[in-house]
Image (cartoon, rainbow, N blue to C red; front, side):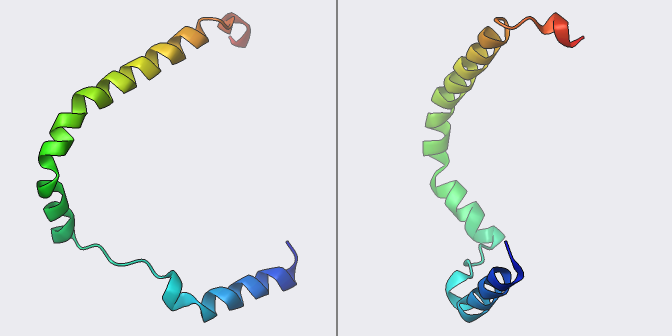
Length: 72
């Protein structure tokens, strides 16, 4: 990326800064969101853990296909 395109990007960001700013999320609003969705989170945990377990088994299974002794 040359100097001209970098300066063009910087100029764009400066001109559109108000559009690019993300809203500030305060700690209290995060805790409100969590408490509102606590039941949904609790209900989805078993499925999430199953998905993680399945993923780990797939990773372990695919690692067993490689001869890792050549890396030692």
